[in-house]
Image (cartoon, rainbow, N blue to C red; front, side, top):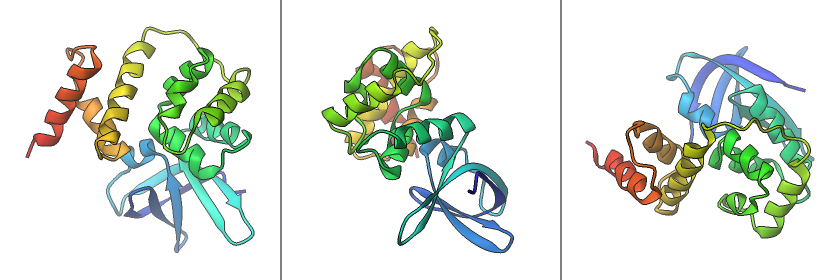
Length: 192
């Protein structure tokens, strides 16, 4: 099992990184958080990983934290959720939003993830309900609103990484209404 990698970043793709470790370039499918925080090419990078062995391929998945990796493994235990869908879920929703959605039985939050329908969302909530610990916090409220903004921006054609960058650019003084936050986020893309 390959649990983590430390190497030199060689290439940044839309959904993956190539990391050189000991002279071998490894392609790692990663979450949006890893892509956002990736150093520049030629710099050292550390990634938590999980190796999926298939009949025809060895697939390496990378995460920004051990917590993200553990959630990925829990998602894989859900019927109908494979590695690609688990990565898409962790790229589309923050860990906090996923935890809150599960704690509040909000399967509709998961339906926003491309590839997840109502039944799969309900299975995920049911499966994770007793496996995820949620610490109530006032910090969750703006994150749920921000996830809605990210969802709107991705529906408009922006990538999850671009949408999350735009949301992060919003200051704490930004209004709490989704519509207003979307307008401000769109201004982020209008900048030269």
